[in-house]
Image (cartoon, rainbow, N blue to C red):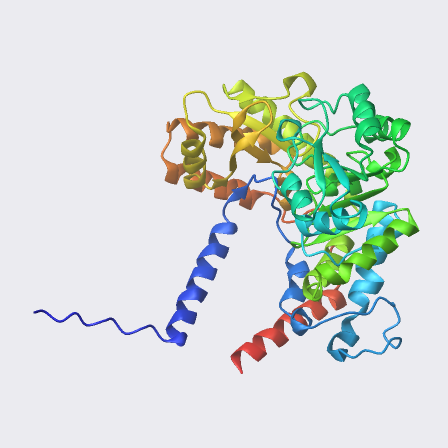
Length: 445
């Protein structure tokens, strides 16, 4: 009988070597490709530094901006606390035009859980109204509401133009929901919050209206999409890595001190370590974003509208033609005669990363494209003709994928890198280099 000898397990050193090679290969590809995934964005390199620094492994429980205040029973983050209390929190307050913000959620869905727990009423008796998939609602919302012990009712209406207002008023009169949660994650045409909030309050004044702006946070902070707080929403929440070019994190904002306190009260049950490194990175991202928020947000929308026009001219089926294909950073596309997975695979081979889905409103199956990252890394509306030509040739296979990948890399190289970010003065650049150098030296020690 032939003996089978097991291969020796690879050593940790060998696995680390392989891991570093994979990291390098991924980084090399990222620098020569263009990502059109609306749920992702690119971090400006200085924003990544806090997640490399020592503070990324530390707890930070304090809320006081004075690092000398508090008991500091976890003092290792004390020297870096300002990055949250003096940078991230004040900048988010200013840009969101909300005096009360919470940067402790770990993600957009985590923020959703905190909001539902805080505002959804007593578990077992509270009712939460939310959007259906046909209205662009998030796939997980109803399930999260149910798991937290609340009853779900869906807001009446279909399509991309908002719930039926008369029926919303009737639903609220009948069910008296504690919370109406508007989570339009698939959004070509953002809802106008004001008439929805008015319809809710006309029949159920105690109901809270919350808007999840995860996909449009950067557009809201930049003024290209209306702030739901101005339209009567009681609170908003978002992830911070989609149209906003920040780390993967979650935030909540409100103008209501009582709601802010309610969010703070549920926080200890949902989060202990809120990933201080990511919060510090969020602070740097907000600082990088602040001075050109408006021009960036408008460029992202115009990029999407322009690419939509070019792809429609190339024969793609583009949704939303009646309002210029989009009013956000998103586009929904179908390629006649080419299955969505095949189209996405061919685009990947051509150096263009896209998102294919099976739950888009109206169309269900198709490509969901996003142009926020393209704007952040430097592409302009004038570049959309070349990008469209690469994409159209890729899905039809009329040009070799390798040739198209070179064209994508050339397009990426010809644009200025991160044009909306500040030019670092010598001292700031020196401090950034010192942080990176310290990490590198520690690694090599």
